[in-house]
Length: 393
Image (cartoon, rainbow, N blue to C red):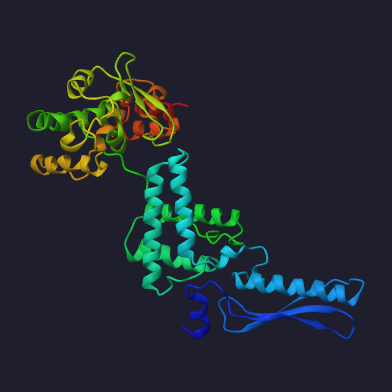
């Protein structure tokens, strides 16, 4: 890295420049002339700004001095004539712009505009990117230097070097697209660096609904060894709750008189208030589980009993993994597979897809119908009918 590049990448966002001066040309035209090192190079570039004709030499000189002061002040504050339409934030360290971005995102979470899970994910993406910048000795780049080349190298690092999936690659790309839009709207950059970067093709998610005999073995195991955790399994199978939702629901969310479970906006995946119909299969155990518990308590805290502390959703999977080893289940039989099984079993029982969609809180019925395709065997009578129809048009 040469000396000029080091100057451009130091913590001070001010670019090296030669102060603006007035040049009076023989043809009567006046120009403000100044020099700045072009970002990413080690050479000065000459720039000029025309001083408009004004009646009276003193008035024109006074106007020229104001132009000089304004240009010098702008350059000292980080502006570059290479990027006329950008703000001084373009030459702020990228790390400081990330800090501001996250600060505003935290405010959006508090205001209920964004989900906390989004904040956690974005913080992780930014931390990974900063770590990569440090490894490549680019931790002090200015925001304006965030370009397509840098992002493509980083995304390749995430996908190939760290051996992450196409889904992870695409999630990072989605984040940088949102962050770039934030920068564009504030005129910190003039071009979206994610333009032209394509998402990687993702393999279709394979549904691994747990067969009934396996599910019954699981329920029997927890009936004997951990009844609190059995309730977690049943809520996932019968009410189709997500792991994160179970970690956040409170005693007061269960409204037995109305026969529903309230999913508060801060709990739901789409940040909207929703209701889930309570099924008789879980109501008796639920009432026993939260018996005498204060309405403000989390339903599943430490030890999977009601408490004041919100449990980490990941911990809800620990007993499941232990049980899998003891019962020697297939690796693809995950805790969330109970939710897949619950949806599949409802569809196979003849419950209309639109009803299952609402119960599972899918945003589109096509999502629900995927479970039908994955979970239901081919209808032999229909296959015979199609074969017959083909032979006798």
